[in-house]
Length: 172
Image (cartoon, rainbow, N blue to C red):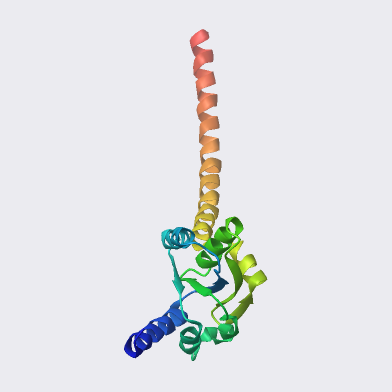
């Protein structure tokens, strides 16, 4: 990599650290190219990104960002997974790490909060932003359907009473 490329990469990575909802750092030593491509495609499908960066460049890119506390995680063969949604990257990394023992989660960051491996794991168990929106929408709609049922119940009862009287008059 030439000096200009390195400078551009550091600038791009710095922007990623500033804009991402969460960043996960993991070791990938021993993972095959096919496994890494599968991991990247799963992350891309979920709305995140996986990058392999030189540790020295990643540490430089971390300077001046909220996630500066994770610079000590960059030792050995590390990769960075990030997403705008704070739950997406940890969830995909942890799901992939369950099936592939070559991916070892070291830690990460969510805003100013530095996470260890357990913190990333607990973050991965939370529902995603879309799931939370769906639950909230369901909670909002439920009372409306109950109100409609309560309002409609007396009218249907009256209709049944009138129907019963009509049948009684016809029989007589």
